[in-house]
Image (cartoon, rainbow, N blue to C red; front, top):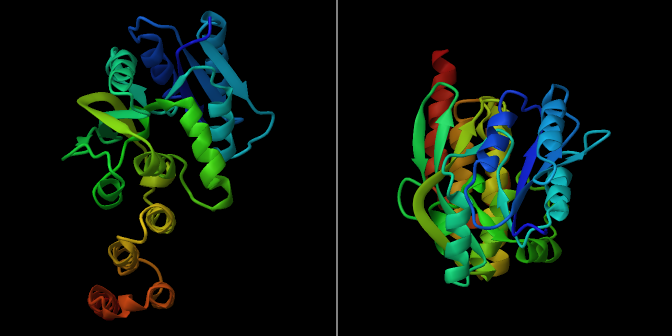
Length: 304
């Protein structure tokens, strides 16, 4: 029987977490069939062996798509999506998990009742130190303007039509853009072109790991990742929003990057990025924040 929902689970070196992720899918209570498709990208730990055990124990639900060599996050994400058989795809990375056993049922009912294309919920972000916070902390937004300026969907809470996800890949061609994440541009595209609905309930947990690109403690990785996120938002504003938020987004990107560089890295890197962003958006020369941040950086150097 072809499943109605496929859970797309990509994983690499998640041996400490992958069992919890898979179990959280197997525990889902639904009136329809579902599967979990695990994209295992040649981990160097015991992740693949754990996935194979679940595949052997639940052959009608669990399928493993494995690599003989590491193909990278972006290719692994897409090939796992393409391997999914369901009408709908729900996302869950190998270090996240579903905390609500009714998650898939609720989202399918919501998306079909409202004739929507994508549904998401709130998540709980949990740190390695035991800290936690609900995301989004304020409103659940469904328009492109709001997702560009306020917040977007946590990947592990999303469920969407597979046909529309494949349409996104064909239209946007994200693999040609050099972006450092897969999920943000996908959900921005849904906000720009499709109907999104949201459920005001926590249904999944996003594990915040220091080793992940999005939450790295290394300032260079933080800078590259945050700059990429803001660049993605500028791209969608240009191509789907008539540059309505161009100055706001460009200024936010500049401020975020230079704030980080005011604490880390050489002054030459700060000046180079400042010049680059002003060259792209000349109005940013009138942005006062970088002048103050540079003064802080210079004073900090003098005191050291």
